Amino acid sequence: MTRVVMVALDGLRPDMIDAALTPHLAALAASGTRFARARSVFPSETRVATPSLITGCRPGGHGMVANTLFDASVAPDRLLRTKLVEDVLAMAAGAESPLQRPSLAERMAPRGLRFALVSAGTAGAARLLHPAAERLGAFRWNVEDTDGATAREVADALGATPDAAVPNIPRVEFAGRVLLDHVLPRQRPDVALLWLSEPDVSFHWGGLRAEHTLRALRAADAVLGRIVAWRDAQPDAGDIAIIVLSDHGHVTGRGKRCLRSELQRAGFRAGTGMAPDVDVVVAPAAAPGLWLRDRAMAPQVADFLSEQEWAGPLLARDPAILPAGRAVPLSLLGSAHARSADLVATFAGDEGPDAWGMPGTAPFDAPDVPEGGGMHGGLHRAELATVLVMQGGPFRSAAVAAEAADLTDIAPTVLHLLGIGTEGMEGRPLLGAFDAARDSAPAEELHELPGGFVLEAMRAPDGRLYPTAMRRAR
Image 1: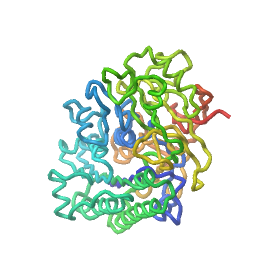
Image 2: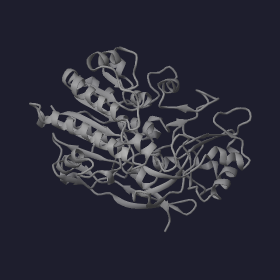
Image 3: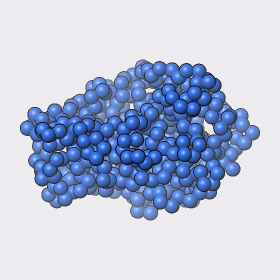
Image 4: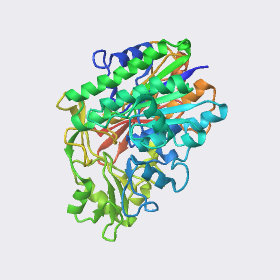
């Protein structure tokens, strides 16, 4: 039976794969099936992407709608940060998980199949990737873990986890050791996922092609190379497939601003919790969420934003909050959920080059990311484009798949490979990875958006829409 090792390189742009910088990934892409039309979800943030990957559903289905969000029923006085396990559990309100769809591990367990997670990302993201680990008796380890049996098990076997750093190379390399030296030989999971925090960390705090960013990317690629070497040395190497993915891309941040401060200067009572003197709660992001005390004030907010040269079109959980044609329904992007903001602002990006010659810049709202740092979360082409390579096992060799794909299609493809049904998932098995005759190119579409913008999208033969880029109308 085929086993699967999945490797996520957080934030990797597909246009940064080349034989010099990422030789192992470049070789794997050339020898396997590369999905040239792979995309993220919206918002293109890690703790939205990870549940989408693991449940096979977009945010409107699984319910994790932003890295940072407001939920008055959970914390009326502050924003929730999903990188923190305590905030993830607070959102669960006593349940095992805040996710409203089962995870890949939960779908595998009734067949007696085991899923293991090794994560160099945040503890909150790890919890969202494998929420049922304790109940299933399965392996979940994260670099931030300090307590519990799994943390002690790893420390006893491999020593102390390195401290966080920029670049985060020590933790990336240690996570690779946890997978290769401990999990794969001792646990022998049917599906293992290794989540590497680079190049995302270095993109954010150094820029897309800073010297330390390139070192971080080479280090992550070297971990992948060791995984391929391990696979090729196994007696059942022909039955071990490797899937490499990224959860989103990056755009270079140009024009940093604080939307909450902008609203305050315009006379709005904006804050980070619904205090008595706050009417608009703002969650900073590349696509900031706005929760309104009174929906009747939505037109005033929309009028203000429409006058700002840095602002893109507004999105709305319920478009009826504004006059017809003023907002894009979040449901168009598969992102409308009861937890969603009343309004989601976007920033007007540009497709011109940054200081390194990489295409794509955009304004952003992120207190801890410097001007010129990498950013993601919005609908820019560079944020939505992702890496997706499937190699080994039954996957096609030396193929470039034409079909549209996003993160929600990966778990269904793994389940299809394992002979497990995908009922209840929004994503679909990517059959073009197995059979060239099943690889169908999507239709290209343009959707007019408010304020002189358009949304480029792909329409799969089954009717599913895959957003590709938001840009100004030409």
